[in-house]
Image (cartoon, rainbow, N blue to C red; front, side, top):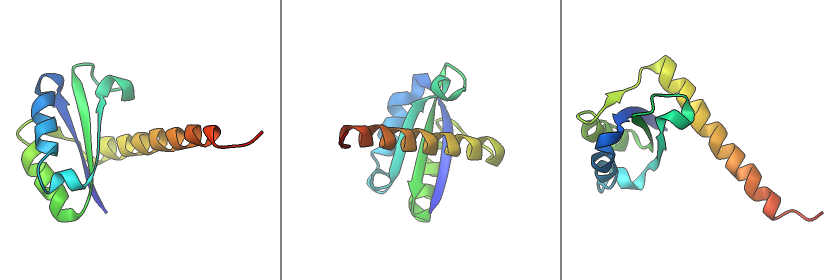
Length: 100
């Protein structure tokens, strides 16, 4: 599975969200987070798109003019943080469905 992460200025959030509604990109896994929540600058958001290589390329075409694609060292660390956040949320949901 391919993926990409962009840092987009918060002032362009509406444009980024519109790009994520693209017919091809909207069918992929997407996450948008305030960068400050993940240790980034407070005036930015992070946009993660995971999915088919063609769809990720399309996301890059749409997000490229809005922000900066993160380089591998930073993007890989952020991907790990996104995954950790997802796993923590899943573990928390498990607490609702366990018997004690």
